[in-house]
Length: 351
Ligand code: 1CP
Image 1: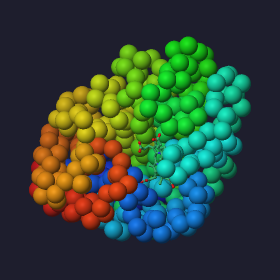
Image 2: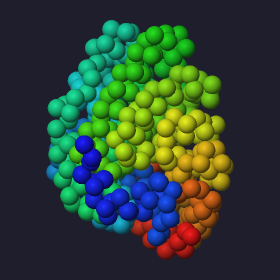
Image 3: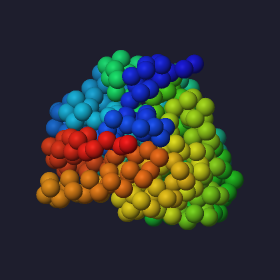
Image 4: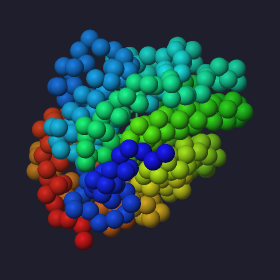
């Protein structure tokens, strides 16, 4: 079934979707990873007293929070307000998102039995997602909604470690030491992430982003063997739904070629890699990125000059979606993001 928004010609013809397809654009499209729900005072107000996961399950909050940055900045896309661990919660995994910490899993996954106990995701697990996406697509009109999911490696890291981790040591211990458990776990997460993206696309999301935030922790060789097949499964499933797929990770300079090969239409580049190198490594795909998120704390003229350099570098790509190199930092001044959006929109159009 074609998604509601993919049939809306204004969304199909939006700068974001055109850039993702490598077509000419009226202006370089801009959105910011984690634009919803980080630095906005209007976000803090509506979230007051509501736990994070509960807010993801209340359509009136999801719709409001998703729309806030679109209203404020006039960005070229909305990103659905949710979290990469929400689908796990929805199927019954005992986890919470703790303020100031992140996702915490009560019983970390260690064995084949632990994996087998995680149910597959059905649309009936997440009716509030379907409802929120439908309402959003109607409200957004010509602005595309990006759906998202966590990639198997990154989600596995939370399930195996039991919470946020810098080294991902237990995760890698399973990857190297218990390949059968690893395979079962990553297949399970791939199936859940693919189903979660399908729910969003079928309700009207017109592009998707797969967040493999922590993939940069592995070598290219290990990525190819232990990570890529499962991310490919998710990206292939999303591709079959006919929407562009953005594939993003942090510290992935050495992995960009493989991340493109995994099935991306748009390769997300973090700020550590010059965008021109990201373009060269991205195997002809469009690219997204990659202003250092800390540049918002620099004087405005310095930030804008750097943004111009990113846009100039992006002209060599098949398509370029302007973004930060990772998520908006919580202490970011929203006025800086407004200036950044206007600045990129005002730069000369691509030929
Ligand atoms: O624009 C948006 O903010 C949209 C909603 C969104 C997205 C896209 C949230 C809400 N989370 C995410 C993705 C996400 N969640 C990623 C991938 C993106 C990235 O790399 O930043 C990751 C790794 C998570 C896991 C997560 N959830 C963390 C990171 C913990 C760690 O390991 O360092 C945290 C802090 C959360 C909680 C969370 N998710 C979202 C919000 C608004 C919050 C904070 C909630 C709160 O404390 O009240």
